[in-house]
Image 1 (tube, rainbow, N blue to C red):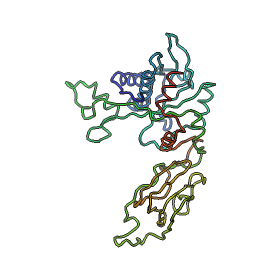
Image 2 (image 1 turned 60 degrees about the vertical axis):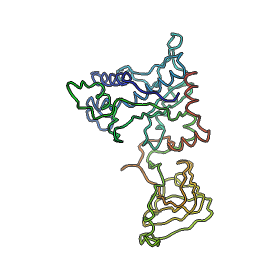
Image 3 (image 1 turned 30 degrees about the horizontal axis):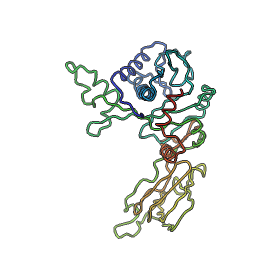
Image 4 (image 1 turned 45 degrees about the vertical axis):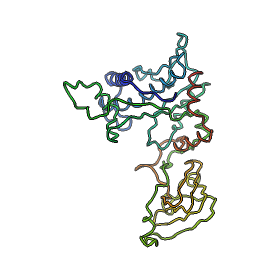
Length: 352
């Protein structure tokens, strides 16, 4: 089993924790980055997704092995009591409470995540805390059914408030979806996986978009007469190509390291160059591969953007990081290099 339908009781447990955290006088409720005070809503938002994910994973572990109880951290602790502990704090087996034999980190991953990993500092802290225990990072997503394809209707707080709202007194939250949320394990990385397959992005390097090769209309290169547009400065033709090309961020601007920009390309194609951007026209099916970004398959007869792009207004990283492109993780699973999460979660449940 790799998924679990979250219940009202699960939501009540999470919202109760968030509320207790907010009410506790000793807890600092200012934002970490802004220093601005946060109200109850912001505190609930900061905890809800992560804690629901933890519950979902705990329930999935229980389904895989119900002879144990997997204890999560739902205690409100003082700052002095906070330690670098795993997300599964302890195990109860045969009515005896003990430390887990495996160090577990539980992370939520959303559809829009580009990179998976940790800062170097976080990873070193986990390794120190784990000691000789094996380390796994469990990445799970939460999906909900929307109303009229509007993702805002599945806001977790909105759905919970709709569920508990007394309709005789108020109908404010009835525009949200009925309470529904499924937690699904997407992939599980061991510490060895992260060290072996991640790329070391140093502080000061750029963060890059991983959804490369956006499809373009034909009229982005050609006019109605199939002649080149005036803003296309040149065309390069490649036939039977099976070699490496360095992708630019824009014309004349390359990445910090060739590892990031060097792509192996196979097939027949044209490269149409404009003042700052390049488009690839696929004359056959094209395979493009890079050790960091993974594999891409472009279809014959279509055109795609052919540039790397940085992420956000300030793409410069503030810390050293170990990151794997999320789409590459699924490819590594398909290739059998990262274990199937269904097998790994059963192994964790049995041996933790």
